[in-house]
Amino acid sequence: MAIDFSTFNNIIDGDRRSAKHFYYGIDPSTEERLWDVPVATEADVEDAVNAAQRAFSSWSHVAFEDRCNLVKKYAEAFLSHEKEMMYLLQRETGKPRRGGNDAAIVCPDVDMKVTAPAVVLAAFKNSGQICVASKRIYVHQSIYKAFLAEMVSFTKGLKVGNPLVADVDIGPIQNSMQYVKVQSFFADCKENGYRIATDAHPRILNDSTGRKGYFITPTIIDNPPNRSKLVTEEQFGPIIPVQPWSEESEVIARTNDTNMGLGACIWSRDMEMAERIAIQLQVGSVYINSPLRPDWRVYFSGHKESGVGGERGLQGLLSYCNAQAVHIYK
Image 1 (cartoon, rainbow, N blue to C red):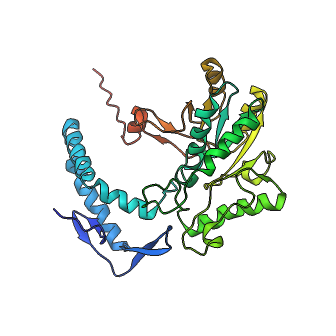
Image 2 (cartoon, rainbow, N blue to C red; image 1 turned 90 degrees about the vertical axis):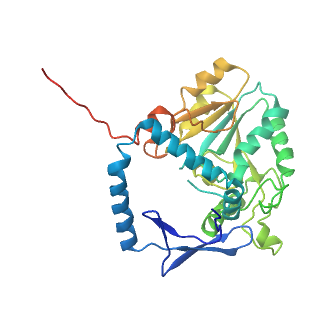
Image 3 (cartoon, rainbow, N blue to C red; image 1 turned 120 degrees about the vertical axis):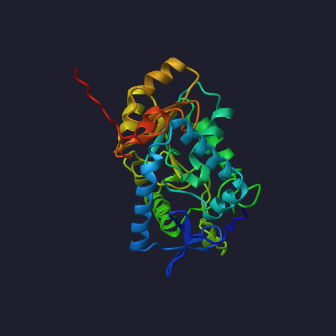
């Protein structure tokens, strides 16, 4: 069946339903209006809930294997339109989904040529608009200057632009509200005289060039204070602080000095040291020698204020279940 990917409906009880009123998003690359999306009414919601309740009475009795097969068929149908779905996501660009302010700890024994680009991409992928993106970078003081230089060199080679263009590395900020918030971090750094390692004059592109779109060049701030806005608040954009550390206990304390605790990554060849640090971090997930990339087989959750509950893995699947205990006495 042909699907029109420019016209959208609410699906209620298996039927398409439009509305009297519509909402639309903004393409952050062009600031152009996107597609009309119907706004559901209270009656629409009631109908949807009633339909779901009717469906559950039969769906709940379907065997587990049969349900798995049906879900697989749904996945296959979805993937048959992978290019169209990708286009929609690229036009919207970014899904701000759980808070993290995640830290990356770089140990003194790393291969800088390999690790620096990986750390940069872990921070700036999707313009930093990922809950598990590295938001604070701690580099051991013995390699700090050299590692920072490698980060800067790689960052300057990243191309910023419309994600529909093949060779673009960094897209725009997803919406105007977040765009304004990210600019506040630049303003604070400028006001306090923090050193910008990547460029003396980082470009907020639609201000400096006159072109539309919520574009900001990736920017690295060299060793701002521990209590600075950029270190203590999650920026969710392409500007990151890089700071030196010397003692394990110190970097562990600084990593944990936040009300968030989603994830962290540790870069080191010394697995014993990396694991020793990992188990002392107050976060839900720790990745060693890898950016944070949740695995569907492993439970994914946060500590502190980084969300309630979790998903993925067996424990995540169980959160969708209603447990029932049947007690039989003879």
